[in-house]
Figure 1 (tube, rainbow, N blue to C red):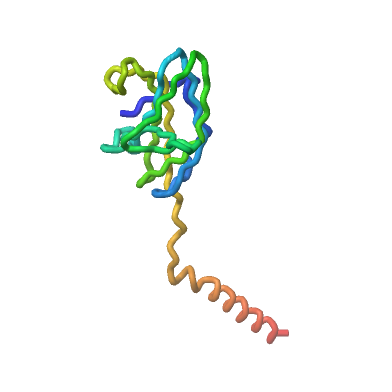
Figure 2: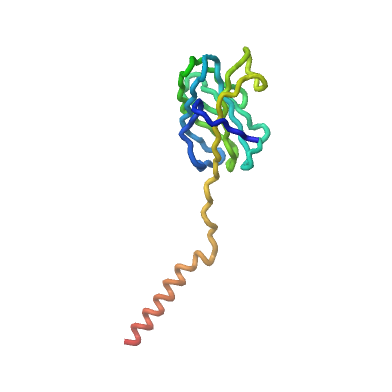
Length: 165
């Protein structure tokens, strides 16, 4: 079940329920702040609308070599050596194959020499629902002919009124 820590060590410029279409790019600015000196990394995952983890959606936040933008990556996560109260801002460009989900991001501090979700310290987390765009209403025959019908009826009455004069 998704639980987020409310603090100022991790924030982003996403708010409300951003409209997100599966396969498109979700752009946002992420800011992390180190509560103490150490090595940090970011993980993310997707959850259903009830807050339950969706299997195989865990990912690392990676800044590929030669790029300034962070992306979601199923295999790797970037590491940041940070001093106490040091802040880093990351422009992010994530792509997911689904929508109508909750995106959760987690800032972790490494305790040992390797990444370990069991022993590393969870420092902060944020989450936001990603809502699908609302599809336009379906086009039906009555909706196509209604304007023609209205114009026809108005024309008929205008003609009748003209004949009465």
